[in-house]
Length: 282
Image (cartoon, rainbow, N blue to C red; front, side, top):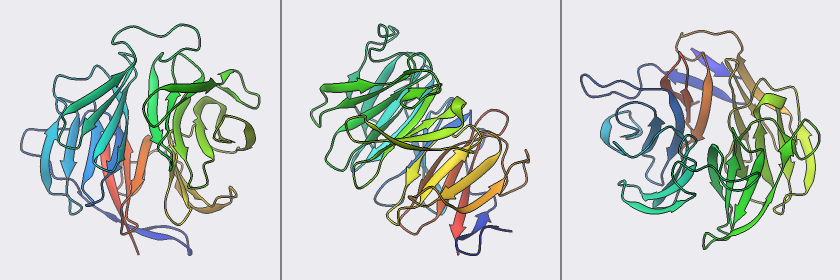
């Protein structure tokens, strides 16, 4: 089956991502692709980071026994950043799973507004700064220097500009604008690199993630069984789903997305969905 629109068409690759015998996914809550088009699927099963090649062949796993409740993964060059919303940390790893650095204190939530209280995801800006969406406890976005030192934070609980109800994901565009998935307010908010409110996109259905590709297309998995692709002005380019379905190409609860060098799309699902789907761009 073909999904998307006349401008942007995809065919689902049924059965993509072949697990070893006896393995299964927990909730799939993060996905990222490296420069070789290897795909890193973050899930809450026995094997937290499962790696596939672009054809769906299993390459390995790592992170066993490390995480409490991982929530988001971001690959930048030769490293991966993973947030853990239950132990209040963000960790940095090599792509082979070697631990390099931790931000936050394990099992200790930050004070009011301070990093971290159930953080959800990470994004690296073109200039190297790190942004963290924080998250289920806080209603903040934190900006770190390229050396990993905290520079500033913004946000508070609420529904007005610069306020959040579940800061669920963050992404930084090539021009430095910061896109934040404000899930329970059903919108994407857009800020300057220093947290000044610019605008927002409404009409979404619990947006869980934001991914922006080199063509400046914005991919948004919506927890209410829908997937949307917008341009940088917030206009819908393609959209499908909306009713819960386990049929290939449709969704139960899409939670994360990433695009590889070919333009192929990977969407991970959580809750009773708990799977990864690949959509091949036509």
